[in-house]
Image 1 (cartoon, helix red, strand yellow):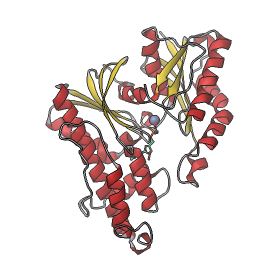
Image 2 (cartoon, rainbow, N blue to C red; image 1 turned 180 degrees about the horizontal axis):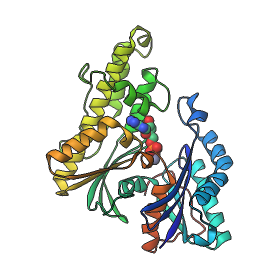
Image 3 (cartoon, helix red, strand yellow; image 1 turned 120 degrees about the vertical axis):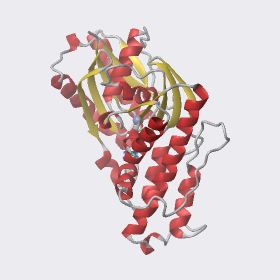
Image 4 (cartoon, rainbow, N blue to C red; image 1 turned 90 degrees about the vertical axis):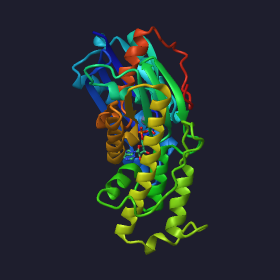
Amino acid sequence: MTTILGIETSCDETSASIVDDGMIVRSNVVSSQIDLHKKYGGVVPEIASRAHIERLDATIEEAMSIASCTKDDIDAIAVTNRPGLVGALLIGVTAAKTLSWAWGKPLVAVDHIRAHAYSAAIDLPAPPWPAIGLIVSGGHTSLFRIDAPTSIELLGATTDDAAGEAFDKVASILGLPYPGGPEIDKAARGANPKAHHFPRTMLDRDSLDFSFSGIKTAVLYHVHGHGQTRGGLEKLSREQINDIAASFQQAVVDVLVKKTMLAVAQTGLSSVVVGGGVAANSSLRSALEAACNERSLRFHAAKMAYCTDNGAMIAALGYHNFQAGQIASLNLDACPNTS
Ligand code: KG4
Ligand code: ZN
């Protein structure tokens, strides 16, 4: 058995996890900073870095204690070193390097987005690969071809806003609190997704890239009037706001499902996985499942606990990187971009 400690500090969740053999999650402790950032309407990088410093040691200790594990039981330390807020990443990377040196354990670097791509496989009895992976998070919207945990090829990505970013911005336009994704999900429940038609930006017919900035602007002008950026929200009832949220969500879900099915058609693969914070969205999960059922494709959504940022997905993919001999040096750096 190979036991990995996974550390995640790329954005506003401080997390540590102990995972055996890339699949058995023995602990997954997540300390969310949402309350710290809420009043600013988004993540403040400096506050995130400070909170990671304050919380990381205790988070790692708790993850080890829940798993009843000492440093002697750990085979390697996996850490997200990209992409993300560079100051926030640096805290996790520094902690992981320090533990690697002090405990004499190998250090493994893990790409955060690829870990989201792997996350749907955690706890599955058999690996779902090869698969098309749709990764929808606050910073990224990507389609991957996943042949194996260490063979994840990018097929398409957003050219502007990420899906989660669009959810957060539209929530803010609608006066809903941060983070906006879960709020829009809630507001849309029972509302009319056909009340308004917002644009479905598909780019070129065969393109697997995304664009969500147009829909955000369309919602902005719908609320305030064309060319206006304020004054309209006060005139809307709760029911009207919920209908806008549902119509926006439907437009985003339509694009995500259509592009994912286009990737399936282009590659001929018969398995689909979805991960990342927006994969927690109830409407997206059911629409993807329905589209996959229609085409007799296998479909796996990441479990809710592994959708938003977590250390388990870092430890789980870290196990495969470790098995493939991908050991990082103590010169490992934090990097804001994906590989
Ligand atoms: O993966 P994640 O935790 O962090 C990044 O790597 O960015 O994703 C966070 C994003 C936020 O934009 C949040 O609004 C969105 O995921 N999100 C959701 C839902 N839950 C979280 N979006 C739509 N519906 C949800 N239920
Ligand atoms: Zn993430």
